[in-house]
Length: 448
Image 1 (cartoon, rainbow, N blue to C red):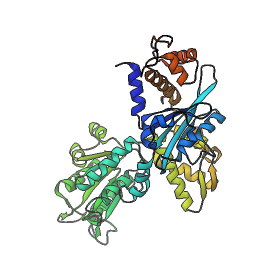
Image 2: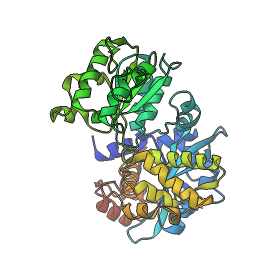
Image 3: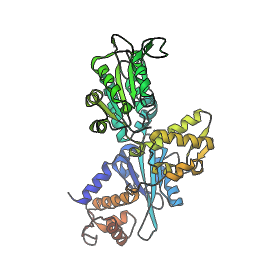
Image 4: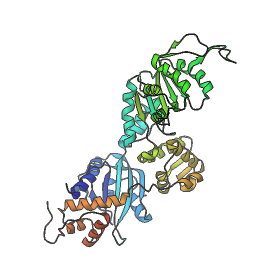
């Protein structure tokens, strides 16, 4: 299979719409996803002004392509509305950048757009009944969305793994709300925040006189969760001695309060959550292997925010809406702020992003959030991830290969379609590593 065919197939198989325009903003390329999202055949739009086709909410003011050209800087991950062929408004997330020839002259621009229709359903309407308060549409989060309803249908013990701030408790609550136990309590215990000497009493309860100051019987959290669900958060911090008692609860479904003389049966679904790798703790001898097998019946892994950057614009919009519900009038974030937010690695994950935007909302109660509204310590820690591929270079490579394929390898015809001189096309293809066909267009006509 030749490189030209593969690259063209890749561009037509990506989920994002991709189109290019010339210097007059007339469409010169339109991929398959763009056809499907908008409902147009590419032959219907080639040569037409992009504003006639997209009829977006920013065509008159703030066009992503124009802004990229005017600022000589890409526009990244901006949420807008466009209008499809049927006249329906669609939410999309766009990125745009200028395409230049080897001499640095602008020959057009390229824009990608991602359909957020399903995201809106998952992030707003559907999340109110399916996965409350969980926002995302990235492939990593889609796997979580698919898994949670399946897990909720059973009564199996669940282990939720994820870094701090990723939303483990939200996922646990979603499992409970979708289960047959939804009308019974969900009891949350943070095992890492309670001293080990008190945690045993908190979990299993105690009888009067079992220790100093134990004047009355006190039911433990397992008993309080009877018929419902108990979330053991940060279970990786539980001491080995307490792990033995937890194992008995999971095996026999009974608890024995401190000072008690007989076990008490409990009907509880157990969800364990941790920001640690429990399997590694087992290898190090810090966590019982038999308890690990008991809690790891079904595992749900929550991805860190740095692995789901596609969700950042949606999370930003979600947190801004929450701020506006508290009386603020924030319009959104500037393109510069969005680029800063996208470049950060987020060791604190979604919780960190929320704190950043809450800080900005205090300093900017109305209008557009700008870099000066962000926390100083955050700005000092931002760095661009050098491992991320160059979007514009990748798109230019794909566009050249695609044009060559459509023109049967005719370099001159491909150059004409891309509005560049054949020599410029050859130099650019060489720089981008695109293998050019021997046919230069002088003898063979364009193939159909």
